[in-house]
Length: 70
Image (cartoon, rainbow, N blue to C red; front, side, top):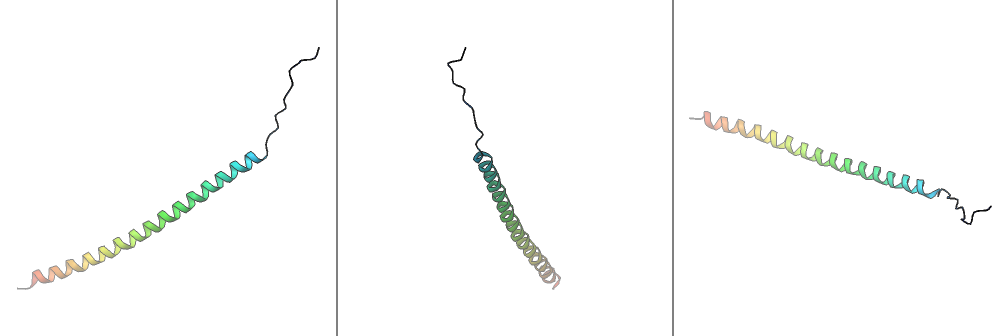
């Protein structure tokens, strides 16, 4: 006896893994860009702090000289 139900064969859509891979690559690129921006920001902050530190040392020397004067 033959079944009245039709058998549906599900085919795997080849575009789905490609789309998933593209989303992952986009996310990886975005993450890399975020890291680059963060590194650039940290480098700028580091340069600014180094500048402030050297200016502070110069100011300390100047104030010591002023305190040593009679």
